[in-house]
Image (tube, helix red, strand yellow):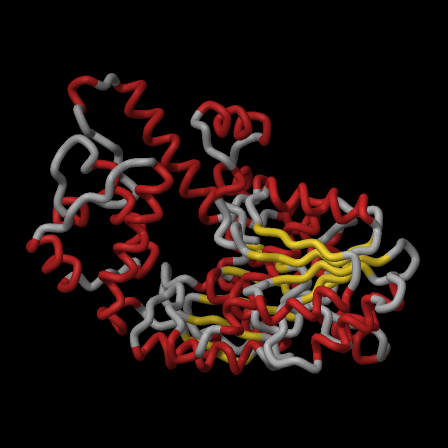
Length: 437
């Protein structure tokens, strides 16, 4: 179940068939829905309900969608509005965006696409509505993380590109997505590209062919993850491609580029000035945002570990195991070189292994995460079963690394798409669980 389910949304449309259809769809998607035939009635009840998103038709008698939007903008902290427009009325929809609408969708549309817009709007509304000093962030809630997020929010509101630095496993993809969601481009696409698996063929498909990253991102955000791991031949091609696109933007005032967020494991200052990586970083010219290592905010360890255990126990439908005194000491004293990524892995393994045998945190930390196989009742398992368990873990890790992008998983595992699909079906691994929407 998505975090935005059970949220209250308003639907405003003078067409009863459309109202009933959307109400039924969102009700079955587990939202709470109130539908109105006109904007005046809806606005009169707005302050009486904790509504978190409004779907409103543009063309309506008496009070059209633009008038509803204008009234909403005059009120403090109004919920986001998604405008439904007729095909060919894009200019008016763009005008609505300029005047504060969260997004628009043109008829005929897929209800799944509309639900995705609503979900994103609710997520952003909840984040924006929470007091800054009371927010619990995905990286923790300590003073260190609160300070980091203050800087993150200030960077998000600029038009600048952003360079993310920090150790492996600190959550740079999560930070990149948060930057995008809190920017003026938040309603636009977020395209994540893991550069360390970009082969020559994958580079052409990602950047040069039809439906490439630039066309899919539109005026949204492209996240170049692990830019310093991009193969050397691809660095030169990407540098040439970006140089040409920047040149076009300079000479054509109506030409826009997506925002770039890019991450490296080391600051570019440690690279020699003549390398293509250094030239790429200079061309992108991003503001540097250093993501803290977990050991810099150890007070968040128990909160994060409990969160990861809860998520894992919910996913595998198993009880949350209790932490012993020694487990607590181990969690707080360990340096966590793999940061949040390692903490999350240990939490998942702790939940899974404790289903049938008592396992300590210190024992799990002695075993490399890449070698961890569920050896519970190991004498009852043959080699084939153990290898399948290991294969499932490798595929799951690849799905996490690539955020559910099947093409990237195939590249990373050097596996044909058909074979991967068969493995996903065999191990009951759902792609939807890894998507970052």
